Length: 310
Ligand code: GLU
Image (cartoon, rainbow, N blue to C red; front, top):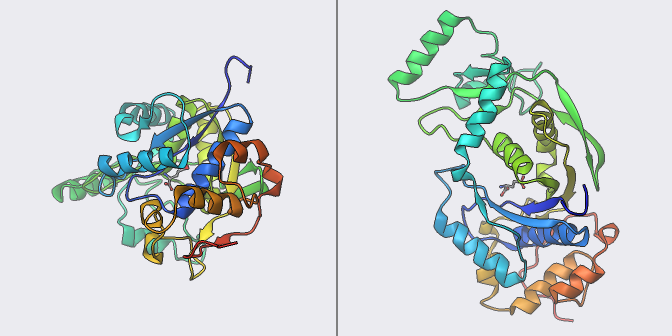
């Protein structure tokens, strides 16, 4: 990328609740990676899950990130404003014969994907090669129940390789992934929306939690099909709750707002700095000046309720 057109990093939370310590740490890391490489840093509201998202939650998340000291460039993009772009991408794929309707219920998929010849979590292709008469019948059956079929990608590969800053070369499964959900609430699917938006926003650096590494090959393959440039991935360690699973709100007073009830924003910044390998720093400018991605601890971080007193 030329100097006049720097690339961009982004943070893209789903507005379905207040941000917790793990989300904040990932946001800070995304900001650090973008800023230290001279990139723009964008915020995108990923509200395609219309049942769980709210504008109020998005507003609170933006307030929290700002309070933490992160700054963003340009306008905040909201995925619910982006539906025409998702539809255009699917139309393009459809024109090339790469989209098909899927009539399977969640249960059917769960049962079929538990079969021995199918990779866990992968769609087994049940609806891929149905004839037109069967399609018409299955479509009508769904319509009688006020439902629409899902749209899936007719994938030409079984796996795809991406490069990740920490994981190195990572090869993961690519199945006939969902592009638009089916049912009564036909939301656009995460892998499609994220891929279309990253390309449209000039994002060339994707920093996010390690739990999303397995999605990267699907997104990179989709980007390849749509002729988008490759992005650089940086999947960072997670913050784990007491049970060793990704930190969640049920794990206690983990949101920024809850933490602020018993500690200051400087202390919270200090905890984040500590967790990214820079103990004793609580100022964002200093954090940025001293950040070294090679010193980021590679293990997951375990959440501690009480702030460390040193
Ligand atoms: N919206 C996703 C989440 O909140 C993150 C998507 C991404 O960073 O690609 O988990």
